[in-house]
Image 1 (cartoon, rainbow, N blue to C red):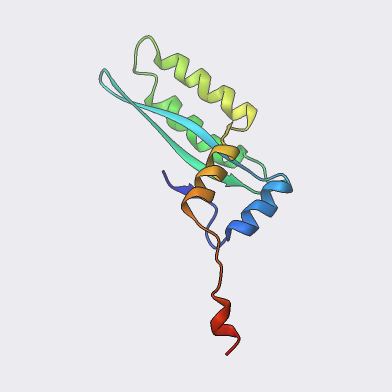
Image 2: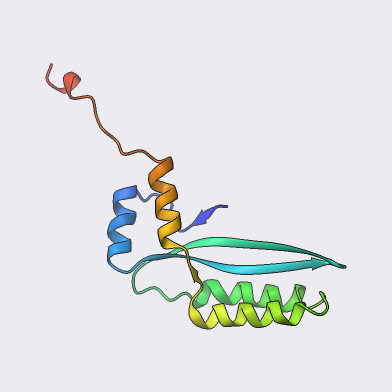
Length: 116
């Protein structure tokens, strides 16, 4: 999955923003094609004091227009997306930070070249 809104940020800057109140959120999407369902989601990095409503509204209307066709669970998925719209998304901050720490090692310069 692609993480949105982290372009140009280093791991240090992400950690500082998370300590100030930033978080990684996911808004669940369920799209139906006849009787099959596909669950999709996008990860958004929400900075401190930034509203999540602008991200959630798009996903709510997507669920409202495409997931109601799955009978009997379609309306349940729409209500679930409305719940996460009100709540501000599913918070996956710790899971994503752990994944980033495991996949992006910290930069450690070789100091022997600096002393020459």
